[in-house]
Picture 1: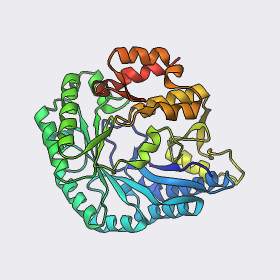
Picture 2: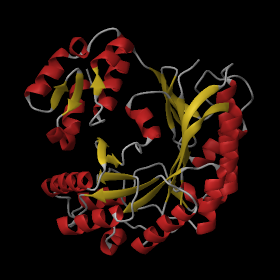
Picture 3: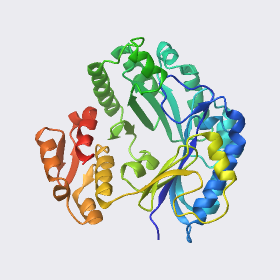
Picture 4: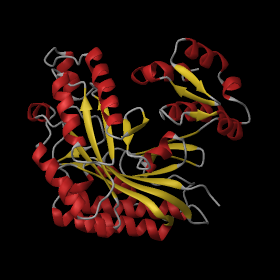
Length: 391
């Protein structure tokens, strides 16, 4: 039987595109939501038809964009299609990203009844000034209300996102945001450093000197403080940017970090299955047109009419990617035995010079037979990862 896969559905619609956002999202195209959701159903059908046996699935994740803008009945139709086409595990994690201010008490009850059992709210900050700077359309009061409604609807697995390293952000303001979200009792917390991406308004403003550059040293202090505080509140760091109550790690994202197979559906979605990495077309209208005009010929798994890029990994690339993604797992790392079983040689044989050099610099360490980032390397992880790519 095939290994369980994760299923990702990209919902690229937003009521407003934030100035820092570099994701494949679009504002003002909500009229296309019904056609887009129908196209998703078609893509699921086509990919499922490329295999003779039903593929097992352990998680379903709706990301974006703002998936909570989509009517529940349309989200539910995708979940139902998944159940028809794949063997969804009884305890599968079914997640939805949502923006506070786009949900209601009734809507969250409907989502729970539709089979969703995990929510991820994009909070980003508890500070009104920072929310305004980020062009978020909610206030922290709406975060509190959204969490209350989610609990009333029966959700017992919530994630709250925060961003640190903002221009002119103080340590005190950051500490206030962390304390306020922890007071809401989420099972999971994600914290990401702001990156000024090329092509975003934030990136352009910074380039022109109109936006102060984030202070790297202060961002590192924020990261270290938050890690210590969350540990004191009973959260365990299991990934560079993620903390969870014991047993509440995000199973869907663990699939990515362990370099296990996942299918990506929707405009701009990426997937990795059958040894192939692939990406779908970006534009919403083009995605819909490709799926609508698809004949029912068999596509090679895991591809679909929306696929525009594909690459079959070499064994060396699989080794590199497995090492890079696994090193993001701060406790788990990459076990020597698992790596040898998968690739037929040990980590030290595959990457002798790189591991020796990074260990000597204090960025990697061996814990028994497991290779992990050192605590001080978590804020410097890109310096580690670059050593294993671009050979």
